[in-house]
Length: 423
Image (cartoon, rainbow, N blue to C red; front, side, top):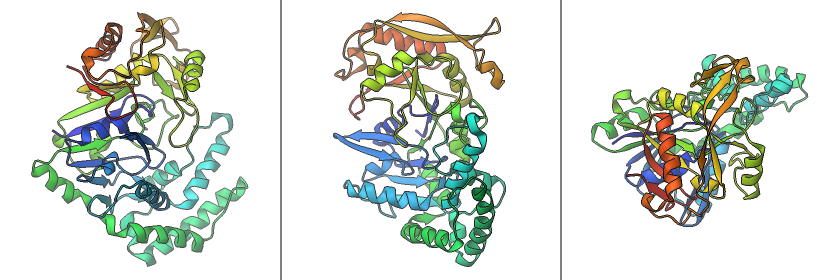
């Protein structure tokens, strides 16, 4: 069965752990969009691995991992990540990691352009990770970007980089940001490229051959639905399609290759960066931060935390075609007497069960809550769904009812073994 794993909130839902759990029965793990602005934390056998561009299947010895054409790839950042993960004892060979020759390249000046655009927005800034993702996707859409395949022709790539450096420096100088010489960019990029060259290939026929031969494919989404460029809380979104459809366009596999979509969400809601957050709750944020939880894997920034928002989840399940829910961080609510679930928004006296497109309407959205009893006990030791407290199971059942999708997996801790399969 070929499965897409997609985030249903603003990212950081624990997708890496679910992908890692399901990888045991997969043959190929595919990353189809985003860049190293994503961060997946996987804890296996007590060891913590933080992944940004590498698919989570890289932690397994017998899996093929593919960085697809929809990814914007920072060669320097990927080499650093490979070096770090290899330092933790994980072998990364050309047979184990394939990089699409159609993936676009994040160049060093893209990161500074990211910072310049944030500076230009002032108090309306998006809150990007400043990893150059937006400017790289912009170059892709403007048809002036570089792909991994283009780097194979150094004369062409040098001319393109030289022209883009000149254009970027004009913008960067306005904001007193670091400017670049074409020579230093070319040297830095090609030093990393030579390390990656053995991994670069046309991944599309490889994936089609795997599909046609009956191998199991697992698609690893980055970020979350509410950061999708089309369906998210625009303009406070990322620059790619983070929904299930992005896994197809970002890999070259058709929708007919997909059998199921697992939507991942936390038992509560978090978001990082700017933008609307109707159910944000300062008390819940302080509690979770006090436990040392909810800090970004990529930036270390504390995430805003709030009660579960099924208005957003209902919409996310619709646009992704979710066939099963993976609810993580249930243990984060262990200490609460009473839990709140947002079932609708009241906007100008009208109840809404789906999120608005009008950005100003978010400022007037008042969450409508339903209260459920907490379970007031430690769930981290549960080794099966049946062992969960009755109140926890009732909370999960209600979540599924409100979202219109069945519960498939439940997370009660960060370790691979703390993943429970729902009946």
